[in-house]
Image (cartoon, rainbow, N blue to C red; front, side, top):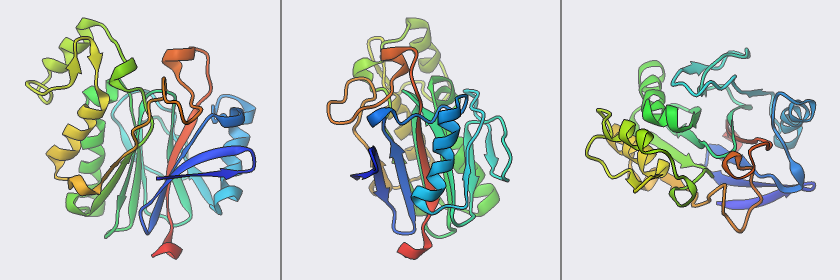
Length: 239
């Protein structure tokens, strides 16, 4: 992981040697809320900042639909492409951004996993789609789990904890401490069950609510807030 600046803005990146995962921060109010004109401009700015032809994103609906990016706006929470110089990304302000790279098949995916998507195992569904549509093998996947709300700051209702504990996938698994839900553990259980190698999982230990190093948007902390953009793109020149 490294942090770098573009003008007044700060980003966090992980280099997969063939693809690059990038997470924006809220420094100097860099906002990617696509419902606002400034957010739309910043999405367009990414093309110049990172030498991209296209930036794919979704109307996120807290579901578990994963789509192949085809230069159109669609409802969903997971997006995949194998096109070079095309980024795919998700918006977040507490939910978990998960970026995936298949180093053999040269395909990338970005997943938005809030509690609903996590309960529905959207990361597992994204991997299944990579296997089905792109012939991906879990042992070739490299994954980066980006900044999100950590269990230290994520107290939820007992009924939600019960939903997880009574689900077929999470039953019997350690996913909470009292009423504090641990989305990190939930995501890692999905990756483990799908056969992703532990050494290929990059986990950024950054809580959007209480991290002291980075300025980040947090819906839980601030309610009315901006959005960060977590994205990945193929970088053939780095191979």
